[in-house]
Image 1 (spheres, rainbow, N blue to C red):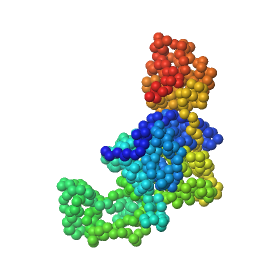
Image 2 (cartoon, helix red, strand yellow):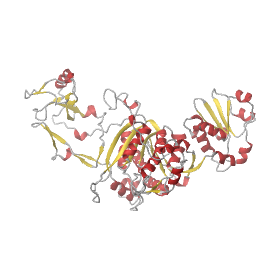
Image 3 (cartoon, rainbow, N blue to C red):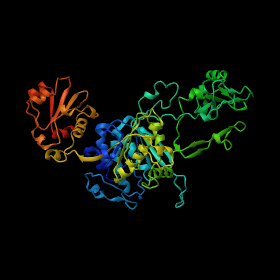
Image 4 (cartoon, rainbow, N blue to C red):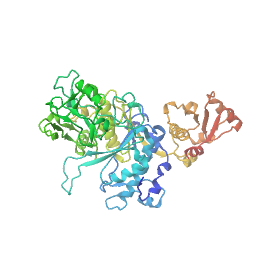
Length: 579
């Protein structure tokens, strides 16, 4: 497989592994919840690379859908490269604006994206998918990056979204679209289409697939009063040539004999066709004088939906009618009902909504439309999905999740938003507050009244550093160290509800019970030691080995063996497990 090469790649390929775990500090004042928790909807302020790493103990392999809108690298965004990679060349990039005249701007962009995409993949559920919006400046580089990180076989599609309706007159061709690259962590390779033959297992099969769209009942009618209800006429021919599906069909009304069009075959074998004809499921056009078509009934197909397209335009989609005389498709210009109206939102509509939420104040230049994200989530997630946006910007993804939960009582989707810029609280979180509580001056009834919901706000804290723990500086809170230790020691998810500080117990997996003797107090750390009394305090042995983290021990190997203890010295053993 061809791979992408760029300046700095050798230094950033494994940079995500060297990124230190950071504390996540709850901010009750900025939250809207009675109980600030990492199990709530989350808004995190801090460098998104560090924040993604900090989420691993709780969310590795748990995120069902990722939607990100990274810098498009047009040269106009004034983004800054800030990853502290161990490379003299990259060190020179730090803190400098990446503008149009920067000859290494594409290299810097790739260096910025690679470690983030690798961590995003670690966070993604085995049946999850990532959606990345981008324009023509970097789509070719992004496609190769994601092929390398997610695997070429996990590429799902490149959706073309009509981002603007207005024409740009300052250039020779007006760019109306953006791309949405979609990759799965594990793309389903077979039975992607929901059908009667797989309906009993389709939703539980491994691998990511798009959910079918809800079937549009307006496309069905019942002109012949068929007792089976509304129907539509589908072509009776299909692509490719198969000998057993190629036979003459005679129109019983005209006597005209039909064979499949060139390069196509009929949809069923001849015996099945005769059964369909007898069951009055075959028609020959509205006048009875055309080639065969299949009656498809709403009641029989409604549970299977229809397939989404890769062109997401805004407005009407032109539909075509079949001319029975010429056997050609003609544009339907007379029936307004035959047009499909789509609305995925545009950059302009997104800006107008944001101004409505912020009472006509312009707070963000490039918001994404809520309709776009909602449509993605309808296609890609179940009602209990966890949705992550690590370039949160104006908070559109959180707004979309809250909207969906408001519209459907069965929806209990959750969002995680990460924003590195200073407006994380004043724009990203403030938008979510207003969407939850309502904006009295808004023209939209939903925005005016609010949709309800909660979120917990966190600031990215200090790194968990060996040297700091030794010195007693920047000591993490008990549960923050427990969260980090449990994940690095076991590789399993950390459940904060299982922590019992009084018993020094922080959780267990299939192999271990894990204990932590620690307080963010240097005097305690200098005096606490695993001795016989503490070993006895662990309680009755339950068949699992005990990992016990403590600064010192006064037990020899005989007692450690007797109490099934594997002693791990704080803070040094943290780094052994990490490696």
